[in-house]
Length: 185
Image 1 (cartoon, rainbow, N blue to C red):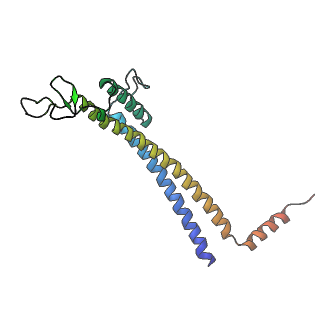
Image 2: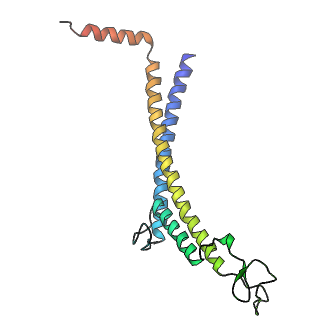
Image 3: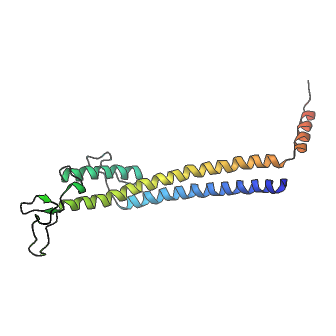
């Protein structure tokens, strides 16, 4: 019964070490992919952002740029979010959600859409992508940290397992041989 447990301990150690190395590699690869993809977009922080003139090539910079985009969109829509804006425009150009009050486009014969709402559609799409890059970089960092934790756990488990493989009698003989070899003054 002792041998299967010993071999199981060695196998578990190897699995933990392998998964740790895999997680570390995957994390570094993921972080590199996020940064490469962000840099390829050639986004540069605006003067009023926390990253003025800086190339957006990290998750944190992507999050900062998403925040300034939201700020600019709120400025462009008089502080209103997508859900607070009327879907249509009336004859005077005022927003409304009532189709009956909406102006009718003479060419399409449909209610005139509130184009200012489209700013939000674009902003939401772009900031979602930027915030996803931030999240992906954080997940990659988490994978790296967990990989090191698995690696160290696997090494520690291997040390304990290998120590358990040495029978108690052999450990006693080793200690007594060491004690006999050390002269007492």
